[in-house]
Length: 193
Image (cartoon, rainbow, N blue to C red; front, side, top):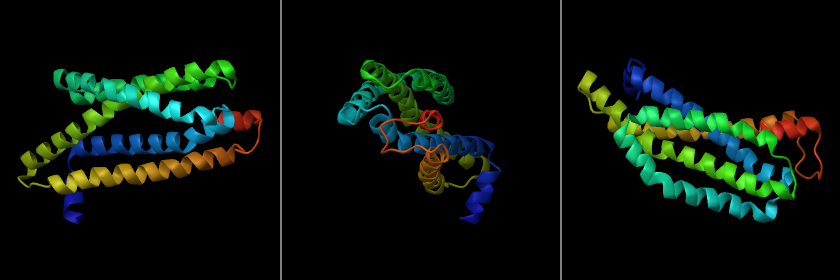
């Protein structure tokens, strides 16, 4: 394992991809840790949370063939980068959606678009990891496909766990109280972050 890690350290594409996976995993963990509390405790849509999971999930699945087409037509890393950039630009829209009866459809639309954009990573990332494996094999003559694939999965899962903890720490730092009917201005900021 030490030799594989040392080889990967000298593999620039691997460093870039693994750094991207670290960012993806951390951000996903933060998002997923706060999602239920945001929808249920802050927005007051606990009874409709299944719709806010299912509709974006179906939208994401329906668009997967489009991501596959784009990844085959253009460079995978560019497709993934543009989708991630679009999602990062769009995510702050959550600051403009306030609790109330008129906010449900904007949430459905926002979460659906974010899920569709996030679907790009489901198609592009495994292919990019495959490119890293091919590059490593070309440069070293050694086939470390299993180690590289396993390492990318472990890094994703570990950083999602760290991101989940960070999400809860952020909520605690801003004094978010999931049992309260109203939140302080700081707690409202914390749940939106």
